[in-house]
Image (cartoon, rainbow, N blue to C red; front, side):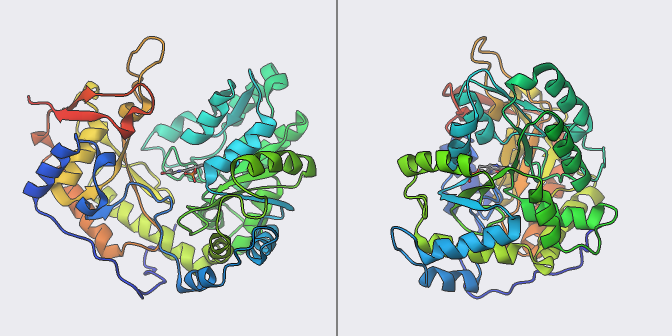
Length: 460
Ligand code: F0G
């Protein structure tokens, strides 16, 4: 298990003020925001756990790289520095930088995904699914049933369900353009995928002559879990594990806003010249020339340094240790959360936390609002509000589990900050029986309603 005693392996050089507020202020602000945390201005938030994406703190070395970024339109030396790091770390020869993860998905899927196809994955992130469905193809999640069971403590809860994958390949292999693995699995809270599982997926892919694509947004966190949890890897370096993981991939899509340790950026890397050539056309059309892909030279430079920093054992022990410690504090107090605790987030099971609130009243959103009112902490609902309605019937698509996600930005908050959040959640848990009414929709849009929805509090 992780060494939860490792303190932060960074010290503070620049500080950013964050503003505490009173409950009365927050009551007014959340009403103004229509009880939607996405519409809340960030200076009305004390501790922001909305996402770990693009919200991390860069190091002094990265800021120094920013100053020396080469802004040449073509053939920037910052591109070459990044290319070297990507080749060395992942062993993938061809690199296309893009502005963020979904742009890498767009470029690669423009080449690989066509109407009526079917893409199996352990789990597709929302944008990945959307880019597949946008091309009138289907995205099929193949997780084990235990992945959503908060009490199932399988150490590799992000693993592909091999039986499901085998069935899909047997029945529909002609429709499958490639197999996708998301490491770690964001949907279930940053749950890792084991090397054994990646190898088994690769063997199935080979048997059916299918390529393997990895969504590597949190590859370093996945490597760390393999080193700590998978038998036989304790003495294998994180770099070697990364090489082994990506060594089985034909291509990777990367949102560098996570384990790239940068605020913006992404890339597509592949070992296939043909895919690279075809994707390059899309990148030039939609992102920019192939050596910058919608980023500034300085962004490429900072990313090259970030990828080197993220794979450090010290960094990962303290990063994941921080998330584990936070989760353990909640577990010890009886708060129902996804277990084992994942790499980048704690997922609170809102239906168990607030059993009196009916699911029709958006129980995870209710908990998100309550936590904001309690302590000025912003999390995000991953449940029915996010799922939206069935486009045909207009019926609510009730979520399998109503999660409140508390995602932890990298190198931003101290353990004291997270202790404050844990205490607020525990206080709320102790008086949970007082919270019996949820929220009701006043105004909603047909697509991606959670971003703009306006809600009101129900009264009992
Ligand atoms: N893949 C995974 C696994 C992700 O978690 C994300 C983003 C993306 C792709 C898309 O990358 O945002 O750079 O375009 N996840 C963020 C989150 C938004 O909050 O979990 P992007």
